[in-house]
Image (cartoon, rainbow, N blue to C red; front, side):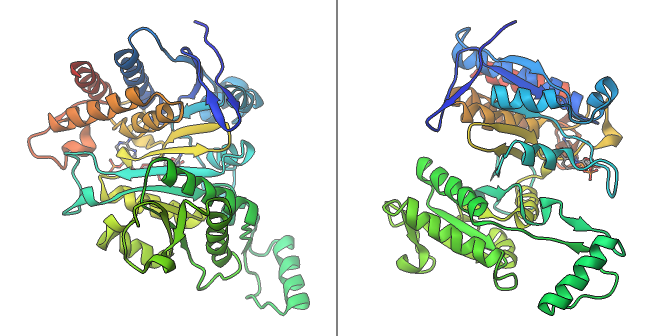
Length: 405
Ligand code: NAP
């Protein structure tokens, strides 16, 4: 089957009716959830557009499968295909802890300059949650994706690099560290912080969201996290002067002034309390890399956990959508786990290319399957009277609800 490339011009995607979209199946449970998800995507596109549009899937390799078949973990051809076709989707990839290969996920984000990790967190009716009012949380998190302590500049305790760096910092700047310290570097730049914040603000404007909150730990890390906050306010003021207003100018706690997106900031630890205690006051969150990593999972837990949380790594004209959980190796090949994270990441992908009708059909389908109590083990164990189905059975249920309209 042949299709056409998605193009990118003047900040807009040009999407043919038969876009070629590369996919990485992923390791562990990846193949199980990919098989389920792909059927759902195809059914939703067919339901929304009849035979007029279809996705032409093309497999690209990364992780264990790539290593088995090509000897490489992340072949150059995979990176080239994502650059060429612009929109791609992936299952989870194994990352060995400490030593070995570097995280493939982090490498993909950095090499492809996917500078925003975007995670919408909202409650889907019927999903079991530890909260009394999980529906009050409806945020989209824009997490800076390529720098901060994830830049990979780290030296092991006792290594010649760490020793030299410690001596240099001590001799030149009087910076004191315990002897034999491991050292990690936390670079945060104006250019990366600003383009991340701009993407968050643009999203709030486009989707009519009330506020963007800059989340930072600037009270302690003044020149990195503090600067992230200042650069966020700066980019809002410079690029969106008529569409944004700082919270200080509208009064604390005040809702949207009717027209402009309110730009707020919160210290990271307080933000963790805010999403629990006052979730409805937040709409879009812009965060540095590490804070965003923690906050995304904490927010996902409030609305039903990682099995349900979608994500996308988005740059300018290139985007890679992915399940946010890992490879759950103990369930690999059992057709057991919840494919919703990958399926919902696919809805983000469909929205990114402007196929909103198909995305909406999928959300309806998932809500229908959950309302009917047809769910995978993770939800079934928390839902009395639910019927546990395998990953493929959940996809069948979602498709049936999509086709029912
Ligand atoms: P994990 O694979 O996310 O699994 C942890 C637990 O979360 C599972 O045992 C399971 O809980 C639950 N879970 C995960 N996915 C689920 C799904 N689709 N449906 C239902 N439950 C699900 O985390 P991990 O064990 O820490 O990491 C394993 C590997 O994945 C590591 O190599 C890690 O580096 C990698 N990883 C990759 C990515 C990525 O590719 N983006 C992200 C995170 C981790 P129960 O045991 O309670 O059933």
